[in-house]
Image (cartoon, rainbow, N blue to C red; front, top):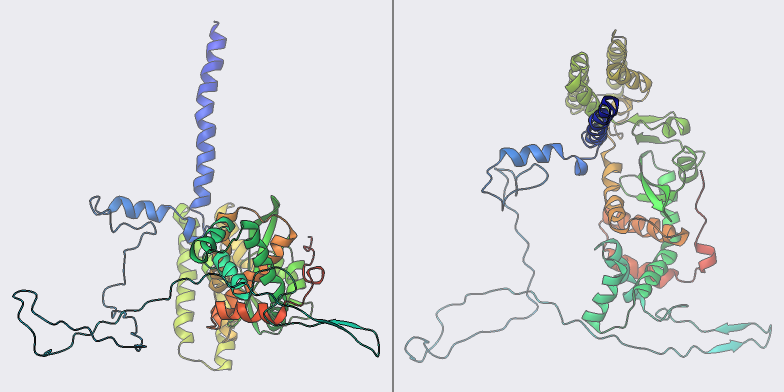
Length: 456
């Protein structure tokens, strides 16, 4: 082996770990970046676990917090229900010596809540009579509210299967096992899938009603996250108001999606992050302060020039929050908007070198028209936490299911998530609401109900 060969091998061995280090550093930057959701931020969890008592494993938490409520909070107790019946539990003699008791000297009540044993399925045959009109010749088949036009399973089975999938996050195989074990009902994973599809088709009218309500809202929180459809990249969007939440799975992440969902004539305020699709759709925006504060803090950790920028932004935000609690007048709000905007303009005019600090100032400058909408409009929130919270459930389901199989899966996914999220917001019982929509709206045909996925 020549000296040149030895040098080349040595350089290759040196280059290999350097490439690996670059890859790991890039991955670490993603996990610790300002846009990484708290559920994926591993840095705080690592620091908390390393600083705690190593022997106290039972109370360790992965989110950096401590178990239970914070000190000083009043305890929370479950409300005891009124008893449906009372049973007198007596004893005839002393278990210690056998002496007979004359009468009890008191009562020690204990309330026990039970549920009935799971009931076996009831098979009902509906003999649907059909008729032919003597006058016009039209044929009519009699209908019954508990007899679906398709499938052999009733409303309760459909509602429970849908809840099991989207509320309890069970795979179709586990849903089938549940019905088999609890009720002795022969139910396959394919049956579970068809039950959720039936619920989605029946609830699509309500889905469209929710979309109409959101289109007329004054304020809408909007956000999006990636998803897979048949292994290909798509996006699941959420549109949320104080009463309604709507999900839409689309191939596009562009401004065409809010235009489609909200309508071209939408004139409300959109609360969003800095994604370019939103200003391309509407000028009436509120940019999320939580995002820019996280990003400013992240840059300040690595660059001293950004530290005063982050400090100024945080002081502005905290000060505005405190000032708004005084319930200022419209005129005071307008004057405050103008004053704080000037402060932001002075901030972005700072002379800094190129790099992350300049990029941060560019983002602040790019949103000058949208950072302070919440100051002038009382109904507008300064952060997009509502939409980010709404995306948590789809993100968890994404981890479990991996990909939606086809457009039918997309249709079921966005419809079921929308209905359950909205009913939860409104304090409705999701099981009763599912029973209602399935019983009342199963007349929609599959061809009418399932739309094509909107392309980008």
